[in-house]
Image 1 (tube, rainbow, N blue to C red):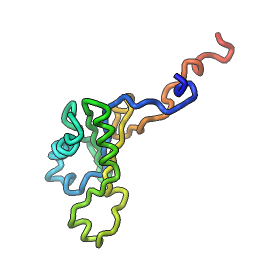
Image 2 (spheres, helix red, strand yellow):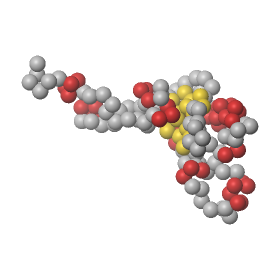
Image 3 (tube, rainbow, N blue to C red):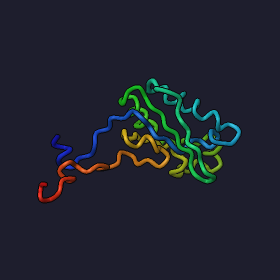
Image 4 (cartoon, rainbow, N blue to C red):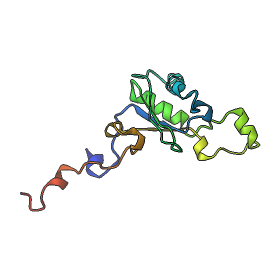
Length: 144
């Protein structure tokens, strides 16, 4: 209660992970339909998924997003901690730039979502702060 009363960060209760920045070879037009299976294969190393990952439709030039829900929040947390920021370029892509460090868009991006953010995952905030006002803030100042 003390954390909530003092405005501390909300606790993560969701086992849902939002992902972006997939390898370019995974999101090409001819193989994009395989993306959910590829994501499942990688995430399966961390634990059981509740269902097949969902890939968001992407407008031209927009990054492709996907969500996956683990059976347990600790599995999701392990996946995010391990995968977020990993250089996902192929050996050929690395050789083309003489081993230069990856741009941010070439690093796998994964974050846990809070319970309220899963519906609109393509534009969902990651663990939004104070989405709802506290009960005391909703009451009129005069107490009535």
